[in-house]
Amino acid sequence: MNSNAKVNLKFVFRDRRAARAVEKSLRPDNVNFPVGLSMQQHLEGRELYIDFQSDGKMETLLNTIDEVLVSISAVVGTIGEA
Image: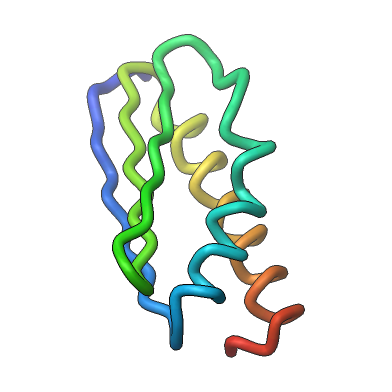
């Protein structure tokens, strides 16, 4: 089932350094998305914003979001942000 969806996530970290570490860790994965799926991210101080847009399968969007959350969790655990 194809559908149009937008998902906007906001993460607030203790400082800009931590936010930047997470943002940089996601860059390698922010390429070669399936047709109809995109991800944009940007920093504002210690806040990281990630926006997804999809006009394809909902399952693909949800799997991508899950992968991003797992990556963020790993970085947060490594830098001691949690």
